[in-house]
Image (cartoon, rainbow, N blue to C red; front, side, top):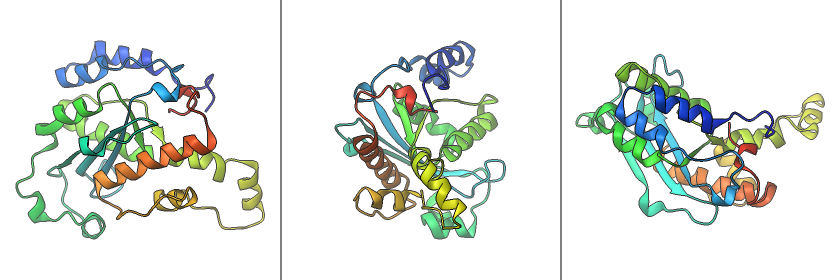
Length: 235
């Protein structure tokens, strides 16, 4: 996305701060002070990953949240936050197989509303980095609408969307499609392998957040510059 097409997230977050009724949400929006022209080297980042009971926020729920603060030069994994939260909708057998969070794990887990202030404070003032943004934005928005009767919006850098620029939308990718060749995978694991990054056990929110942070650092080093304005990457 070019700077001309990029949303003015500073103005949007200021409007949301003025409209927010819940003080936790208002504090989250008010902490946003990042113009789109800010170079990536100066952007405080937070890798964000959610594990859920399925893919549809209307029928499925968040069961864990991982947040890892970082910037282009350093990942602060010792400052990571990880929550297991009680889902609104029942666990699905497939989701248990993937993330290994069971009914017994959730028996004493808090509702998301009980830890929402901590989650938002961990993100406040930082640009979230995700791999496949429809999960994080849609599930958090749905969860807050259910609990607070108001949703949430925020900018993200989506490392999957960045991979799509090169392996789905480029001329070479289109030519590959026209020739009937299988598209290059832009999933987190396969994307990391292209940059020589090690494999992690997937479907643990904190580890997937770490994996996403490392991937963005590699993408910027290979494809962009620390001087790239953040509005060239966020959506």
